[in-house]
Length: 409
Image 1: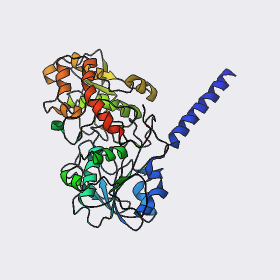
Image 2: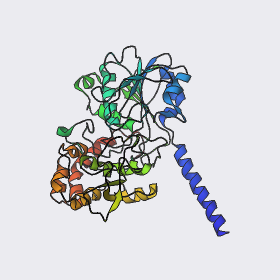
Image 3: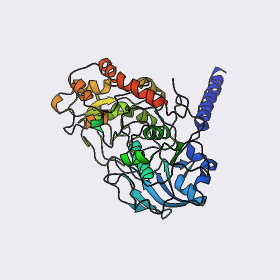
Image 4: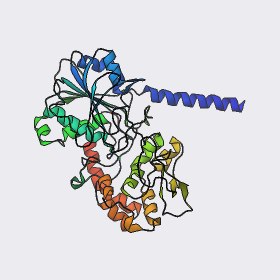
């Protein structure tokens, strides 16, 4: 009897969790809201494999409903999302629809005048993970700039942020601006892609030409009769306390929600000689190096789809495996970036002069050179986190102005 009662309660919990998840509606699913804005227009779509309308890709959905798509733009990892991080992607043609695909990555990050010839409306729909060095928000900025500079209305279909329930990390300093961090925001900024778009537009953090054109004509109230520069279509039933589970992997090495949660804490290893787990079945949950003590967890990263080349391939590494269930990962991280992984690895690494890559890529990831200096100086996690507070407090005041959904605090 007790076993039956337990199973019954468990089924109710699972059902309620499923309802809470399914009750969140990404903007792409709200077809009746935004289709009237696209009818009779020539549309350019910036999308990838996450751009789904329920179980069908956005491009296929729009074409089926008679929307004229004349260009597809693809970000890092490509339109279908299978390329390695940083891999060069050529322009091509979508085999299913015959529509030209233009890669917006590498040397060609912003649509040109020629790219936008014959385009009436630009559309953006890509799932973000809410981390500054995840490059889709950089691609979004260039897309917004191109829209404003070329006087093309831009429609952004918002999606929930799977890391949108906290804000943490060092705020980027301008001299460390790069494609893995373009704006003075912390590593975890706690905003949806639509909210982020409103912030960088409203704060005039765009190109000089885009800022000059922009009169902050950005709206979240769709009407086919009202001209707009930028329009954000909101999600339904989402707020910043939500723990949204991604229905599609956002990139080849974020294959589990546990990796999505761990990514802000363990991506720092991309700026070191350690493996960050690429070439294993749990990227960003497993990390280590052959030089670390052999009493630690052992693994051998090997080439695979989405990680054709990386550090320490085919070498026996020693390090850490922090994997577990989603709930266990959330508990371990405790709504903040955990620096202990980086600090412990540095402490145990025998050749400290060669722990960080000579490219100083760690500074691009952190958005500052302070973190590397603090690690080398043996600063505690508490002291490092304390140094973030002034920047975080300043950012949080800016962030509040652009929230479209109820906050977590």
